[in-house]
Image (tube, rainbow, N blue to C red; front, side, top):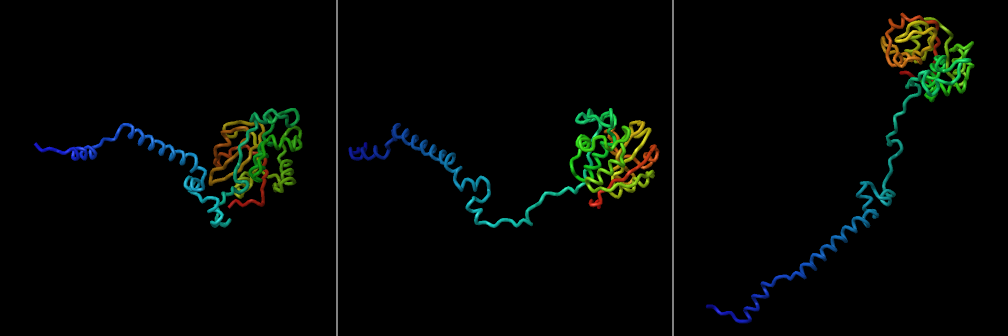
Length: 254
């Protein structure tokens, strides 16, 4: 049997020494503290630094921005401007916002405000200024009525004086009305009898858009009539009383 000296045995024990539990715990604690320091740095220090702002937003910092060039105004995308008069509102005379308002003598907007409501829609369409039947009634009152009846010539006079719009003389030709609308006018049209889904003893509508054989009409007493188109043949069968064309000469309808 091979003998090993005491020196040799001591040497073997040093090479095979096992780390104690206390040392392992100390190493683990040191790693834990290092981890906590790193977390604290990224959570509380880095967010407030210029670097954090730069990396989080992908944008230059205030210092960098001061040194960078800005875009010339001509290169900044601008919002698309909607030309005045290109959006036709739909107002109904029985809307609860103004239906109860006294109008045309002892009546109300709901009962007698067809001309008032058409005038409000046409005015907003042609000027691009928000004008509800309540707004318009608050300005003109009953001054555009005669014996409790809407007088569209008086509404036209008001719009000419207040907004510079142009109103035609009274006429009676449906074909002229459609042609005027195709050229950019809004036409106030008086009718009696059947129109679309309703029958009227006397009523005002606004003809406002023509697309081929399709003609769009705002009927202040019927949402259904206002949201459909009429053919020229359908309109030819309506009992029309008169027409007025209202135009904003400053608008382009190309």
